[in-house]
Amino acid sequence: MKTLQILALVGLTAGVSVGAAFAADALGERQTILKGFGDETRPVVAMMKGEAPFDLAKVKATLATYAEGAAKLPGLFPDNSRTGKTEASPKIWDEKTKFDGIFAKLKTDSETASAAITDQASFKANFPKVLGNCKACHDDYRVKK
Image 1 (cartoon, rainbow, N blue to C red):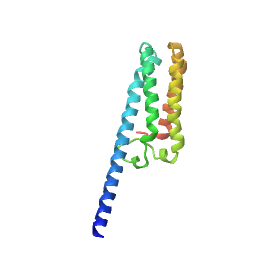
Image 2 (image 1 turned 30 degrees about the horizontal axis):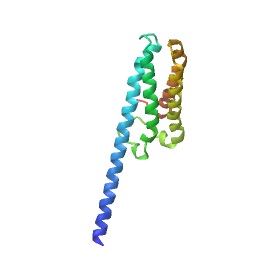
Image 3 (image 1 turned 135 degrees about the vertical axis):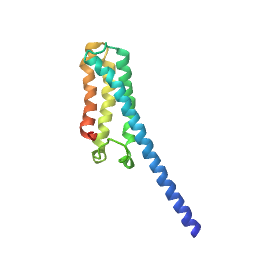
Image 4 (image 1 turned 90 degrees about the horizontal axis):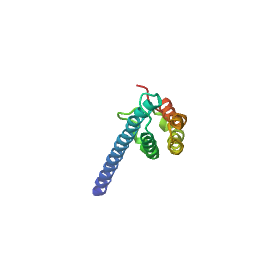
């Protein structure tokens, strides 16, 4: 009986450790993806403002990064990743379906924009729609610094 209790305790401890490790991995991975979004966005916004020359290949690469990241992000907000060094609002877990929907829309809008953007004029017409997804998430689900 004592052996069974010890094994149960070891199993419980291992399960907690694995859960904590998954939360830390999810937090790190989502932060990497979101930082990548920011890194990709800055030069493209410079193009929008006329501060940098239009570069179709860069725009398409940025949109591909958004679509790829948006597909992964919903799974990187497990319930046990609410705490730690994060700017994620607790509201995310209260409105998980709506929150996940922003990523689905970002993926779709990025793919649609990528197909539609062929020159600077179509870029200026389509790219702001994609950025609206970023704004929606930041406004509602990111803790303000």
